[in-house]
Length: 418
Image 1 (cartoon, rainbow, N blue to C red):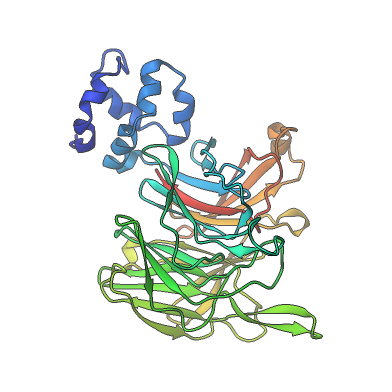
Image 2 (image 1 turned 135 degrees about the horizontal axis):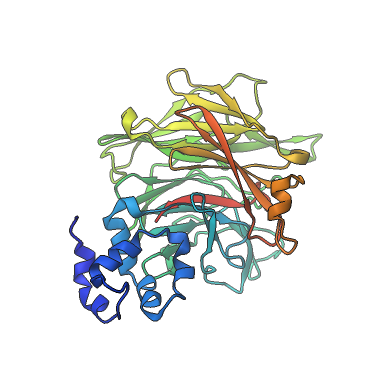
């Protein structure tokens, strides 16, 4: 059995708790209970007083990270403004939901959107976004936010962290693997209530988790918002990629603004491989020909440690599924979503535990939908899951915990291993 450094340092706290499981020492019982799925912990607290104390203690998370096999792979949904609607975790393995507490409320701001949720270790971060501020003029004009919050799974509470140097929403963001750092690039002030307009920017920043500090890096070669970011490579050869997005805009008939979407990508070569030293940007050519498509679809990345740090990069464009080939700088068709959404509604797209989840709101009246239908809730979520190694599809359906159907064009999602 592995040693329990975090557990032993708090053994006196466990000794203060009455018996967890009759017939077992508390240290062994605590280890057994720590392997129960995270999504069940809230319900298990009501079993008895000792379990309530244990499942509310920070030792539980310490035990789970000491034994990675106990960690759950979860989806985190932000159906709307997290200042008024709590994010909810979903466990696909156990088909169970677990709400998180709402973020700290600011009475002066509302309508937060285009923020980025990202997980790093036992923490969930919500960074930036676009919102309305009652203290600004005019009050109906959205502005970008520099605020950032972190949910600490040890303490089970939200806490503010240092704000970004530059306010932004709709930006590229990724965690530097194994370094406790987060990079953000580009972005702007566009709000989901408006199809166009809003500012664009090129600045790049790095957040140091340990120091709670943002540091400016070399900016993007040009303004870019609505882009995605991810890391390629490992060790000393690590790069931060920023794909797609939009920059300048043009007008139709001199009235209607239309975005000019980028077909290329830019790459930041990190000097130290860990994000501390910054680096130089280089440009990657166009990823498709003129007329092939107008803009990038939804992008997700699967880390592949067996492939020398080269991740699998996938795009969902309508119901078509593409894989990015770095050698040719082209998108190659991988598959098609087996079941299209009704009425051309949007999909949610996220990577979890090596698989790709295509999520839609179920409106059809199948037997399964009727069985799970709950008139007081928002229907059911239908998840079509693709395994890029086996190249096979499977599906699952679950009752939605949301009061209304989720709009995946405005909702935010991320994954977390906790």
